[in-house]
Image (cartoon, rainbow, N blue to C red):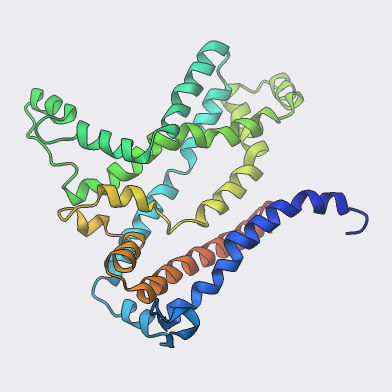
Length: 293
């Protein structure tokens, strides 16, 4: 540390940031194990042990919340390769103008507010005035209540997220592809490898460490499926598939004032994320040369 004090000094602001905003607030985790009363404060509130956890695990809505959260998380994980495919495709474009145009076109939705995205869904999928149902009507197909049908919620949630974030997710992969040694491609061409073969045997193996690390990080927020968007799309008709743990924490904590109960549910959600992150990292370290630690 004495020999590399400049590097530690450079990292100090980030360490202070995480310590102040991420570690110090962990002191409030004990609310989950107490009957918290605001007037008494955290220390003055009575201990309740694991009472709030047991109440949540034994509730009739526990399995619905857990299954909805897991299914949405798995749905998004299954589509994890899409940014990689887009990055590989953009990397093969030779026309610079078209390449920049395609990048801008795919990046732009990332800067659209989630509120606006959900508003667009309601506008385009409206039962009477929506463009999609209008086109279906021209094809003699009965109108579909997309935003109210629980069977459509997951598809709308995930694919609208793909549209919004796909281009932004390719940035890191494009940066990794830019670092691929051109001599590898030259050698492959000399050996008679075509474009597809070079993608499969040069590009993909070269960016695989980046892919593995990002895949592990994806599991770090596996249960955090996007509180704001789910809340905006949620209604009483699609609640059977749109109710997730994070929206339940909001409803029970902020709307109903059950602070300790909501803290217990939120802590459970965070622990599942941590376990998944550690487990996937162990698997990555066992079966590949790349891992977070």
